[in-house]
Length: 139
Image (cartoon, rainbow, N blue to C red; front, side, top):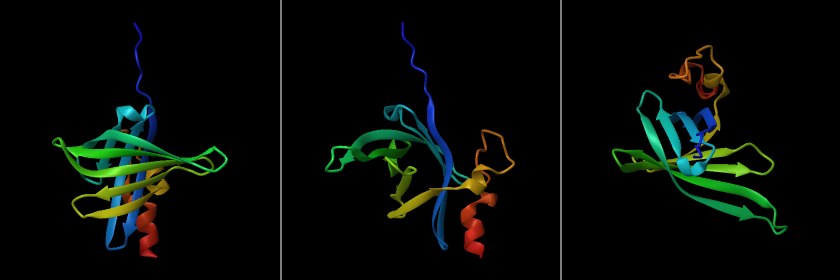
C-alpha cells in the first residue's frame, strides 16, 4: 500500500496594496498543487484553497517561461476570492489575489519583516506589526 505525504511547498507571509487599502495574507500551498492549500488573512479565519487549474506559457523556443496555478479561496463552500500563483523560470514566484468582496486585485510580495520576526510559533506564523509594507508606508 502506497501512502502520499503532503509536503508544504510554500508557507509564507505576503502583503500588498495601497496605503488606504492594504492586505496581509499568510499563504500555505502544498507541493502537489491539486491538494490546494490554505490562506489566512490578518486576524481572520484560515480558509481552504481549492486548486482550479494550471496555465503554462511557453516562449518561441519551447522552453517553459512561466506557469500559473489558480486557486479558489473557499468559505462555507462559497468562493470568496482567488489566487494566481505564478512560477517563473528565472525569477521568484509571484502572487496575485482577487477579493470578490472588494472586487479588487492585489499584487502581493513576500513580507520578510513579518516572516522573520521573533515570533516562532507555527500557529501564529506572521507578525504583521513587523511588516515591511507598514514600515515602508510610514516613511
